[in-house]
Image (cartoon, rainbow, N blue to C red):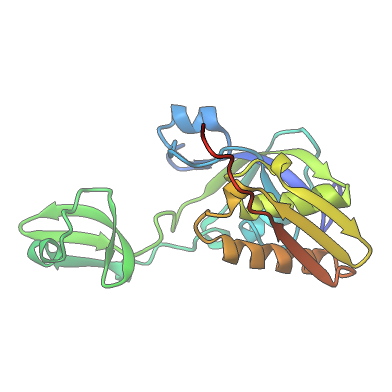
Amino acid sequence: MAFEKGDFILIDYVAKVKETGDIFDTTIEEVAKKERLYKEGEIYEPKLVVVGEGWVLKALDEALQNLELEKTSEIEIPPEKAFGPRDPEKVRLVPLRRLVAKGITPQIGAQIEFNGKPATVRTIGGGRVQLDFNPPLAGKTLVYEITVKKKIEDPKEKVLALVHRRIPPVEIEKFKLKMKEALIELEIPEEAFYIEGIQLAKRGIAMDIQKFFPEIQTVRFIETYQRKPAEA
């Protein structure tokens, strides 16, 4: 067994639907652009996974333990271990006017929210719209082409990887970290101060650190505001 529960690893993957070959997710920017999956503002890079923590699909999590570093492997996940079978009872016909009244202009294949639930528009015709409330990947066999790019061993690097997972827009090199026995001090760069949800991210970082480093009693965040020099 190459990896064990609790190991910190960085993975790259391309995920596709076996039945059609359609790629629906990837960590690799060139693939995302080629497959027209690219989202502006999304960060494409190897993803941090702590093996056995359920950060990925359970079947994928279990398979990670048998992978080898830097070797691309193909993992097939049947529907019952992915997003479940497709339930025909979750498909409903809705009058088009009800959607229009809610400000929704349906298009075939589009993901919409109806009565607080996500749905896929399957057909439109005769003044009615067929909505599928199954998860988009229900009933599909998934195939992951996955490569473990790195196993993180150094404790400081592990902490910074946890920080980056919660605050991905800011380069990890800009955070300054000190570890002293039961204390961690993390100096946060100014560009992170105003990121939406930063307080929740800090709380998540503290909880992650205390989970994976039980010896740490205190996590201290340092934020320094400096006066900008006056323009001449």
